[in-house]
Length: 395
Ligand SMILES: *Cc1c(COP(=O)(O)O)cnc(C)c1O
Image 1 (cartoon, rainbow, N blue to C red):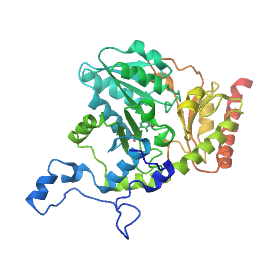
Image 2: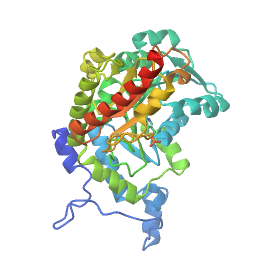
Image 3: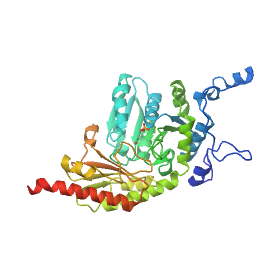
Image 4: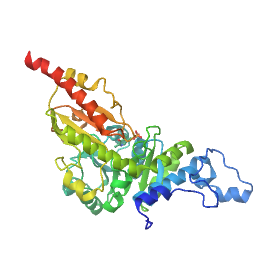
């Protein structure tokens, strides 16, 4: 149940395991495989429950699970070894041979690979849909459509989806809604209040927040929990006490980190929007970005990840721009305290829609560095781009 506490207080309080006097604020790290029982009766009581054996979790993992569930208003949470495993496990649990899945065309690319190979091999058909489809998704529902998967905003292309409309239609047709809610975190998108049944997080990103943990989290309603939990147990999914401890430690500061990531993303996008090479900013928190109205209606904040579409550039100019950046690193992640920049190409990862932009797409994560230093780094990068880009034009 949701307590009267506000989110910030839940972040500080939830997931403390010890209430006795003199107990540490933080739950200790439990490293455990074998658990000992001192009587046949005690062994029998534990038998078949998660507390019979280390794989069933520990007070450390349960502390993190309860904190995440409380934050987003879920019935329960399950922790997995990565965000991707949280997605694939959830899909496997709710779909079976002959079932049909509706999948947003903006989905995280490895999810697409799983649908195209593993789900297909199991006789589960996937149809990709335009992320902006809204209630028109009704036309794609089939009698065997069991699940609709949403990711909003798309973590590469930043389309905002009309989750309440999609959820309403899905439920009318007896399908459930699974959401990759990594971008907004439990703080900025209250998925269960918007009709989502399963909210999935790459806790690798903002929840742990320090680029040193890989983890996923599956949060569900009471109705869906038993189904996913059964497969979770059968597949032997578990995370270590050390990783759970790190993620819980990161979680404590999620609210203040997100505030700063958001502020820095606004500063960077404001500066970027004034550069002549920039064709479009994809940051739903900005009024000039696609999806702003839906974002304003449904979200309570924006994190620090956004896209920048440039006017067409040569590969040589892009190399000159992005090699040797100082404040920004290049890497396939985000959500940590550090700033990142990545060149990407969404064209190849689409089947239901066409990516409308011709020029290169940069995905930028605004970290916690000072925005002046980040902007100075970007400014140098744009100067290198300009210097290189001008050569063929003047020749
Ligand atoms: C990173 C990411 C994942 C996968 O998380 P891992 O922990 O890297 O497996 C899933 N969805 C989104 C949107 C992501 O950005």
